[in-house]
Length: 338
Image 1: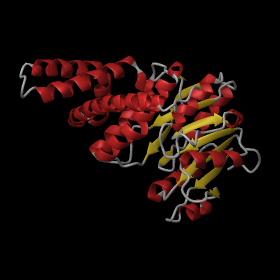
Image 2 (image 1 turned 60 degrees about the vertical axis):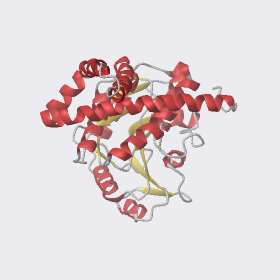
Image 3 (image 1 turned 180 degrees about the horizontal axis):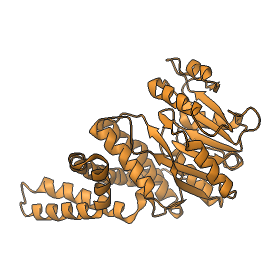
């Protein structure tokens, strides 16, 4: 690691990181790129994560209790010395080339303000839900436009001066893990900055998902706040990643499929509409299902289809709830005019 003014200040917020955090720290020591400092912001851990980070050579900052990852990252950025801030989540394991690939992109394009990568295609969690969710994230990022309109803090780097100029992550709006990185990316673009989705910059995800936990995060921590953000600032909407037309059409079809299946016992003819929706969903997402087939085989791909359609359904529910909450906020005069 660099002892002078480093190229990267790697910032990792952590709360009771456990075995995944230990892998995160070991992976940092295996980087082929060494011009960096590692800052761990311990957010009130009780499992010794702070001491583990110190033994690994990290500079450890401690918060005063649970402040949330946005505040923890901001605190790390205030103490950072690097030209670029590289945010890595505590449950992500960098590949040996992660920092080197990111540094090469910034050096080739010195006008670039930020970049982010993706999870790799070999997540640690072995359950169907964990494999599906992480591979979905990998696929979406690997097929996205290189010129990005958003940001991702799981594995993303930003010029320190730009980050500080914009005030970092919005702690008041996002005190808990949510879409604070997406919102920051929109502000970077609004300020005239450029963000790149660099598909070769990857990390291995250690999070183990349950179906209930996945739905909770996707609806309440992502879907609803993202809908609110788009309704309050419609100028930020860019048809990329999860906002491509195929995804929007799939959400509508997923909602219609659910409604017609519920109606079928009283109106059997609704099953024809259900069948049409199913065929349309298969055709719209054929590339993704082919990707799953190539990566994990026929059984996994087939078992993932219902999970994917469920995702479209509850995304539609989150969109509706977001609209309702927006109307309530607007009526109460709470809508941010920015």
